[in-house]
Image 1: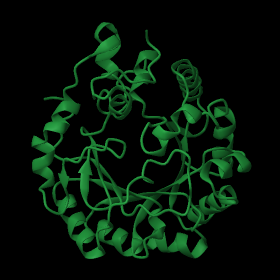
Image 2 (image 1 turned 90 degrees about the horizontal axis):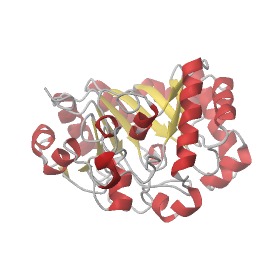
Image 3 (image 1 turned 30 degrees about the vertical axis):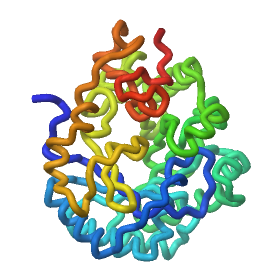
Length: 333
């Protein structure tokens, strides 16, 4: 049995809206102006998703807390048997909101913080005071009994500060620090020259991150970049599959219900309102291409290809024009 064939995505990343109160330099959804599904339609879709065998849903956006019916939507998801989580910038989470989120069924909430330095984070996110509010949100959520993590997009502003980021995460009592590799989508593509690292810098960062995780740092340091396989980590970032997980373990749903392999691959394979998820999962030609990549360019002669499968498919598509193109972050010659 092929290692990516499960009967349904384990997780769906679901953008409830595209509106946001921040102006982030790397945002992938600012260029997306699709309409939002109403609550009744969403709840019916969530029930179908759970029935298809999906285990978890992670809500995002935009900023999901800008949806006035977020709590009701989360309750629908939890009531359908899904594990419910969310990514938020934290700005709108005070103590009562944190308790309400807990009551609605949120098991875990990730707060986006991109630097231990308030002024750096605030400039990157485009909102003065956002760092202070994000830190406060972590405390409110912990007090309400919600598990928390910090999500950090690694880029030019922070790639040399892993030790400080880990110390900051430990100080704020989160159980996990997710260091996300930079994606070339939306504003991330438009601002790539300003924000992205070169391949040698990515290699140096991941060497440091792997060494930190190896020696034990008191926190779950998580990264999901398939190109790490060339540093000796089997199965990409230690996931259940090799290469990208998109289309193998997870899918993305946009605010209008359109289904894409991930939030950074702008190829629509169907719609959650009008199409059968299980059927799409089994038969989509786009997902088949992601699950059966072929080496191209420098990947053809690379000894690590069987582990990394060409790296991030989203970056390959954005920069190389094809899923099979080599990941532009790859440092192998």
